[in-house]
Image 1 (cartoon, helix red, strand yellow):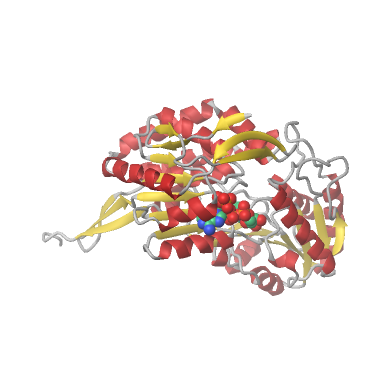
Image 2: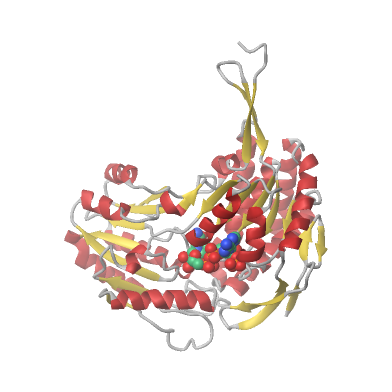
Length: 477
Ligand code: NDP
C-alpha cells in the first residue's frame, strides 16, 4: 500500500500538523491502495502563508520566465504520461484505454491551450481615451477539485493560476488524491519557486471551508456539486473574494428528424455513458422528435445493450465502476426513483451487473416514457443513466431543453447546420455541441444558471485569474 501522507507546502513534502490517516480504495476491487492524510485549518494556514510570501516575488516574474516553467511542466508531464493514466485508472476506476486517451490527455491539451493563450494575452493596453489598462495576477488562489475528471480540473485551475503569476493551494478530492500528488511532483521538478503551488489533502467541510473563509485567499475556484459550490460562495462572502464555480448539469440533447439517426443516436448514447456517466456535461436528457422517436428508441436499445462493463485494468472500450460506494448509492436511488415515478426501463436497471459483486459497478441504464418533471430528468444522476423524452416541434424542444435549473452544455443533432445553430442560440447553456463536435482545448468551458459562473480554459480561463488596473496618466489624450 502506498504511503502518501505528506502534503506539499512551500516547495517541500511535509507532515500534517495533526496526523489523521485516510485509506484510499480502488473502486474496482474495494481494496486499499494508499493511505493519505486529512488536513486541518492549521495546515491551510501554513499553506496560505507560503503562497502569500511567494506571491510577492512570483507575481512580478516576467511572462517569458513563467512560460518557460509551464513548458518544463509540459515536458515532464509528457514523460510521466503513462504513470498519470495508470494512477487515474487505479483510484477512479476509469478503464486504462479511456484514462490514456482521454483522462490523462487533457493534462497536455489544457497546458498547451493556456501556454498559447498566455503568449497572446495583452497584459497592457492603451484605451482610446488614453488611459492604460493593466492585467495583474489576482493573488493567492484556493482551488478545490472533484474526482470525476481529476487531472482535467486540476489543470484547468492550477495552470491558469501559475500562468498569470498567482500562487495557489490545491485541495483535491480525497477519493482521487494520487493523481494530484503526482502532479505536485511534476510541478516541483519543473522548478516553480517554493510556495507558488501547495497541496493539502482533506475534506470539504474542514479543509475546503478553511480555504474559502481565509482572509489571505483572494480567489476561490471550485468544481463539484451545486450544493458544495453554494457553500464555498457563502464561506467566501465575508471576505469578498472572487469565486468561480463549475458545477453540475442536466444537459439536453435535441435530435431532429433530419439528423443521421443511426450515427447520432449511437454517438449520443455512448457519450452519455462515457466515464461511467460521471461527467458534468454528459448529454443525459435525449429529446427526440416524435416522428423518429420509435426508430431512435430502437437504436438506443441496441447500442445500450452492447455497452460492456469491465475491469479498468483491461484495455478496451468498456466502462468501469463508479468512484465510490456513496456514488453507487446515489445512482441506485435515482434509478429506483425513475421506476417509482413511472418511467419505463429500456436497458439496465437497479443493482450490479452479473459477475461484479466486488466494486462499485452499475448497469448502463436507459429510461423511456420520461417526462421533464421526473427526478431522473431534473437531477444530475452522475452515473450511466440516460432519459429519453419525445418532442413535437422546434419550439417544444427549446422549451423542454431550457426547463432545467442547470445550463452547462447542450447538444443538437440535425442535418441542417443553419437550423442547429439557430436552435443553439436559443439554448440557455454555456456550450452547445452540434452533431458530435467535441470541446476543443483553449475554448471557454462553463455554465449558465446553477451550473456555475466563470469560464475555464484558454484566454477566458486566464481572465478569471486576473485583476484589471486602470492607470490615469496626466498626459493621456
Ligand atoms: P462535492 O461537490 O461534495 O465534492 C467536490 C469537491 O468539493 C471535493 O473536493 C469536496 O471535498 C469539496 N467540498 C465538498 N463540500 C465542500 C464545502 N462545503 N466547502 C468546500 N469544498 C467542499 O461532490 P460529491 O463528490 O459529493 O458528488 C456529489 C454530486 O456532485 C455528484 O453526484 C454529482 O452530481 C456532482 N458533481 C459534479 C461535478 C462536476 O464536475 N461539476 C464533480 C463531482 C460531483 P470532499 O470530497 O472532502 O467533500
